[in-house]
Amino acid sequence: MARLIDIGMVLLLNLVVNGWFIYRLFQEYRPVIEEWNRRVEAREPLLQNLPQPGGQADALQVAIFIIGVALWFAYEVPSTANSGQTLGKRIMRIKVMPVESPKAIGFGRSLRRWNLMGLPTFLWSCFCIGFILQLVDCIFPFFDRPLYQALHDKSAQTVVVEVPQTATADAPGGTQ
Image (cartoon, rainbow, N blue to C red; front, side):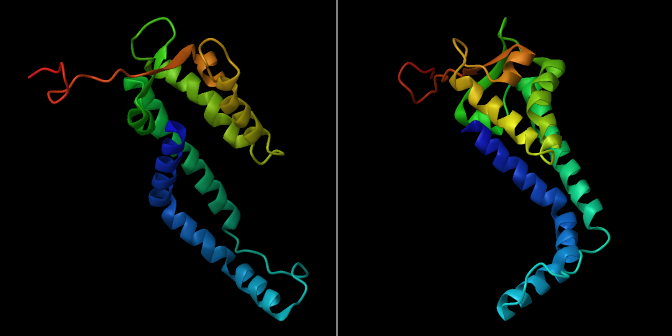
């Protein structure tokens, strides 16, 4: 669940940061979309002599993709390195820690951890190899025993643990 919250946050960041580029990409594809819709309504063949998108479409797609991956990196790595928690992990009350101690994992381990999650994104266009690698990484904790580690946790020697609930003033046994 924490990962889904983080994906939502990164998507929101992408909409804000990449918004202009996405708008420009839509403008590049607008003639193609309009012609496609006209052909659908007229019941004409859809793919014959379809107009091509504008000349900047490829560059815009690459820019949007690279900025998106960079935003994910900037969202995930520093927060995990410093506190072991992203927003999703804070909400779900879990934390990333080194296997051997309760200290923060630091930038190096956070980077190693993210590399196995994030870098396969660059292989999505290669027969979905990147997506398959990320899917295997996501399912791995269901089969790993005893620590339920994903592959990215194994590579960085980290583990995800529950954060204990702290006593509050209103709770029984809490401090006044």
